[in-house]
Image (cartoon, rainbow, N blue to C red; front, side, top):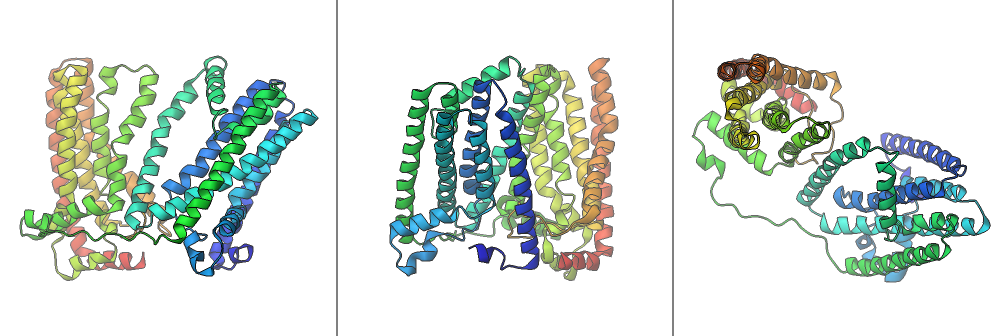
Length: 513
C-alpha cells in the first residue's frame, strides 16, 4: 500500500505530498498545544475540553465516510476470490487503516495527550491505555463506516443524495457555531462544556478520552469504569467489523434500478415550441440532476443561517421576518448566471439546430420563474401571518419581484456572454472544475450586484414606508415589479442576441471545459 500511494500520476503524487505536509504541520501544531496544556493547573477544564474535542473527532471518523462516501480501495469484496479467512482478512483490512494521513495525524495528536497527562506514573499509564483505545476505535470505526458507505452508497444517485445530506448537516451546524460564539465562556460556556463532557465521557464517543483526565483528577474508579467502557466498545466494534466483512464477501454490490417512465414527462405538458421544449428539458434537469438538487436543498437553509444570528442579536420579529422571501428570490435569480455551461457539450444541439437565442433564454427561465412565484406567493402570506401587518405586503412583493426578475435578466446575458467551466453532467455536484479563473468570480459578482441595483429603488421606497407614510409601500410595489419586468425582458432579448452571435464560441468553450 505504501508503494502504491506514490505509483500514480505526477499531479496526484503532488497532491498526496501536499496533503502529507499539511497533515504533519497541523499535527505538530496540535502536539505543541497539547504539550502546553500540561502546565495548566485546572485539570477539570483540560479534561472537559479534550473529551469534547475527542468526541467530535470520533464523530468525524464516522460521519464523513458515510455522507461523503468515495470508492473504497480496500473494500472486502475485492478480496473475495483470494480465499483469505474472514478473521484474517478483517484484521488485515483493519490494520491497513493505519496507513494514511488521518491515521498519522491522529497518532501524533494522541501522543500529545499522553504528554498532557504525564503528571504521575498512574496518569501516564491511563493516558497510554486511553490513547491506544482511542486510536484503534477511531480507525476501526472509520473502516466500518467506509465499508458500510461502499455497500449502501454503491450507486451514483445514492452517493449524490449522501453528499447533499452531508452538506445540509454542515450548513445546519452554522447556527450552532453562532450560539457557541455568543456564549459567555467565563460563566455559561464553562458550565455548558462541563455538562457536555460529563455526558460524552460515559459514552463510546468520549470514554477513551476521559480516562486519563479522570485519573489526573483523582477519580481512579471512574477512570477504570470508563476504561472498561472504551475497551468494551472497541470489542463490540471489532465483532461487528468481522461480521460485516463476512457479510460483504458474499454480498454483491448494489446496482442502480432502472425506473420505467410513461410518456415524455414535461415534454408532454409544455407547448410544442422551441422555448417550450427547452423549458421542459430545464424542468427535467431541476427534477433529476444532482447539480440542481444542491441549489434546491440549500436555498431554504440560507435564510435560517441568516435569521439565527439576527435573532440572537436582538432584532425584532417584525424586521427579521421580512428577510427570508427577498433573500430567497435574490438567490433564485442568481442560480441561472451560468446555466448555459451546465449543458456542457450538449449545447451543440442548440447551435446546430438553429434555435433562436431568445427561445433558449426564455425556456431556461421557466423552472426558476415557477419556483420564484411560489416563493413570493406562499412566503408573503406566511410573512404577513408572522408579523400580523399586511401594510408591508406591496413592498415585500415589489422588492422580491425585482430581485428575482433582475437576477434572471442579468443572468440571461451573463450566461451567454461569459460562460465559465461548471460541473459536468453525471459528475458529483461537489466536484470542482479544473480551472475557472477570475471570470467566474466576476460573473457571479456582476449578477448579484445587478440584482441588488435593480431592486434598490423598491428597497428605498419600502424603507420609507416602514419608517414613514405607508403609501410608499404601493410605490415600492410599482417600482419593483416594473423594474424587474423591464430588466427581465431586456435580459431575454439581449441575452438571446448574444447567444445567436456567440453560438460557436459557446460550443467551443464547452468543448474546452
